[in-house]
Length: 499
Image (tube, rainbow, N blue to C red; front, side, top):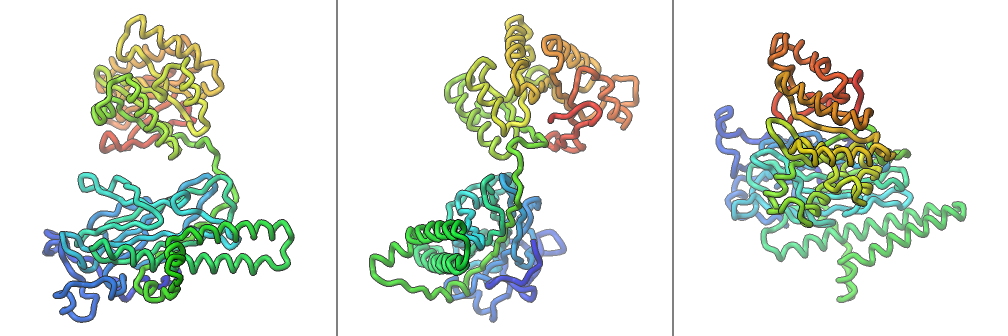
């Protein structure tokens, strides 16, 4: 983000106020229902606030935050600055917009309602990153008090509500297609405080649409004026861009409504003055990220959780459909997913494709260029019968001859704790590599074996884990302390990588 001049309607540094004290911290009271005295005269808070008669900046703090930030309920406000993003083609980048009410202007336990409207991102040549396709908006929703879920909101306009004394966040993502023309794309996100009643929505959206139509006409005029003395090929391309832009304007609700009553008021100065405008600039670089991620990111999903959550019978048509939906959804985020089912102790059956290797769906999964790596199921994990071993042999005989075989790996045991468990991993790996000598086995760990002839819990025990598993494990993953889910994928360079 750049420290440029504030856009029209933005908060200035002079208006910046620290949030109120949180209950139990520095002797403060509750963080709910508090009021900043940013409006002139305390008497104004004793009356119902009409958001249509006040600038939204008097009611709301708005500021940008990086996607890596965790925005809690008591995140303090910051000055609003224009947001700049650098994105390659075939890449997704995100940013957050934090919202914190200064006062409450509606009842029913809410601080107030906001109308959020996004414009397309446009380049000087008339190219666009369209709202709803390349520009998406989600609400950051806390789960057990932690900002976690990203809930889609309707575009180009959406209405959201805020809680008193709490900071909320919007998650803005820009998806740049591989064929997008490089350049600088600019647009705005309009945030306006509105009344609680539903009737106010039409008026607010209509005023915002006025600005959108005006902006579209100005862009078309700019492109038209820039075509003078251009080569014929560039002129034709510019005319196509103008035609596309004008067709989009004709579909705007404002023009549709004006055609019915024969008039259209383009004076949107009052609305622009009351709306907070977040300027968004996206620089699209002139290179394309590869379809296959160069650094694999794997993500595990428990099949039993899916079965319990959705009431699905294992192996049913709906079960396969649900797993496929999860797979496709994660794949679009450059994640190579696998499904898992736990066996005895910490044995784990892991697989990327729920269909067997001789099923057409298997080839569709494994050949997808977006998939960086895939897990092969080791059937004897759940049952050491001859039938399970035959299933393993059949899978390996088919897959090891495929071009995508180099993407495969086995994940057999989660965090072995003693020498007996290490021995079991070595035995399972031996069975696999007897059929496919170049198969790769991944082992996760956070400590050395507790009964090894080394001091338990020491750093020496930790770093000696590979020596207990070579040559039966080729990929080592370890977590950086803390909780079980706080995994870092730390690949030891001397033993191979997932890629």
